[in-house]
Image (cartoon, rainbow, N blue to C red; front, side, top):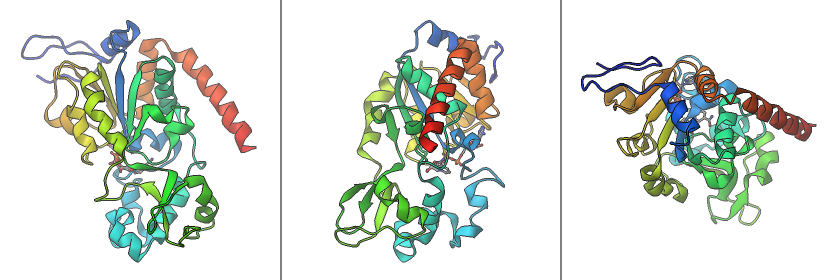
Length: 294
Ligand code: CNA
């Protein structure tokens, strides 16, 4: 029998299934202190950024405005060189500064503050993990970032910030040296993942807990990382639906907290007794961002 949820339950082997409360206890008792986290677009939908695949609200259901032949075209190099406009329209939307981190981002920041975060692997390109104060060396931005950009002709690298004005004015950014189109360092289909992605080779075998938050686990090679932790390591999925190995090959130590990301994270925080601390952190960070926006 499969058992997912927060109550105690057994399986065929008679062993008790792990619950969210058990996992919180493991963290609390410092039995888990090398936590790896994998996240996707569902982490940022509460910040107001649509994901790809949620029916109705996802970008794939709302691509008419970009006028592209099929959804994936927006991240295809071949199409980009034919027509870079749709990608830059999306970039304008996602460029750092437009959105703010939410409760779940700050939970991950708190894991870092407490020295418990081994690494955060994100598929997101909105940069909200950085805005939440998680330092770049704790991050693997597997699908790239707007923080830097590269000329598609001479390969010179630039800070993404240099082209904010162009992107906001809906102008295609051009290399100041060779006039080639400058593309933010977002990984397109068929492009290599950033070198940092290969940190997984050492991070995942070392992890003693894996959180997977807000992802459909449909994009490879990222998705396969869910199976890269040792089999004894608890894996916690916080997502609207059951995905990846949680659906087709669940393990004894898997916990699935199904529903809204924020409610799921709130439950973890509650079990950990970190509620006040997290609220205090969010308040402080909000004040900092407000001051910056003035
Ligand atoms: P996806 O395939 O769109 O899946 C998102 C998952 O999150 C789905 O399972 C949803 O059910 C779930 N979800 C969405 N909102 C919530 C919520 N509030 N509570 C609980 N669950 C929720 O996105 P993936 O990240 O899995 O796919 C990888 C793509 C998406 C990457 O290449 C990203 O670059 C790309 N993407 C990124 C962003 C961003 O940076 N914010 C936005 C849209 C797409």
